[in-house]
Length: 406
Image (cartoon, rainbow, N blue to C red):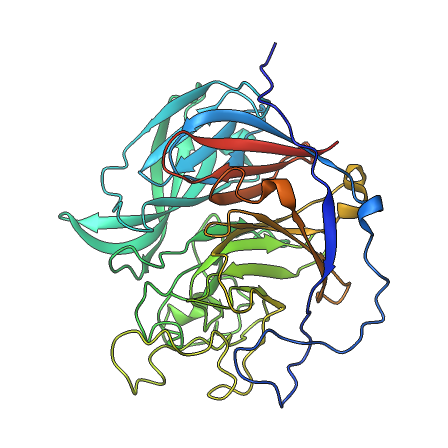
């Protein structure tokens, strides 16, 4: 019988959270967005919110970066030090084996390495999954790229099939992004980082500091991207720009709404609702007037970019180092059904955001016992069983956790 690694029943305290609609003209740049009173019904109270059961599926991982569920019940986990783990199931007590794959060209440094992953919807026929990884040429950092793999029937070997997209910028490994998620229309949606280079986020010919959309099979830009007719072929991939370091991308169920979780510098992490062609206002080069990487500028600089899209939520005067994002889905979640889940690295917590139909943030809940209980939290994916799966990323004996309503 599978060993259950213990559980926590988490009482969720719902607290009011500032939400963002259109930014008032008088508000200071970088201040936590405010909203007008909402006509949306009051979110469920804590008495309507189920307790949570947290179980350990497996340990022995190292910086588990993303999670992919296979049709046979097994689970792939990418690990930042260029390793892929295969778990025998998504249940507590799963066995962990390492998948043999040619990953010697991955540039493992700082925040870079083997990062995000998606399992293809037709995996049962094709055995394909796609990863986002930093890449070296002759031992030097070269770029960040999306690579499509084929997993052997026995799960022991992954063979590289194709470079789906290359040329995402890479510097020292800082702000490498990189989270791929399959959109409601089947297109691949990828959040990228600005690699701590000042001019990249506002440069639409660069793939850094962007949300990209592309065909999962061909690697071609999505045909309805906002800059599809641009002369520069890289600009055709851009869906939104002006981002700092996106590490979470989530598609709201039964909609085409794309949410991202994005690192701020020393304040104002952001959760954004992505608009086609939108500028999200990050520009540490100040229009090219300064060299280097000036992180004193606001995350959403409405003085320089009055039409920039304000965040739906900001962390305020601190930074949680928000990471992955996913949605809870299913009646079993009760009052949490449809809630946006965001993990935090520095904050070592889970943040639960209740949204209005229009996509604004109505309230926030933080499971208190999750707070610092497991250390830094990175990946978050909803499994085919409706459970929430989260990885720790502390660097030693990292874990895959399974969270269900109790």
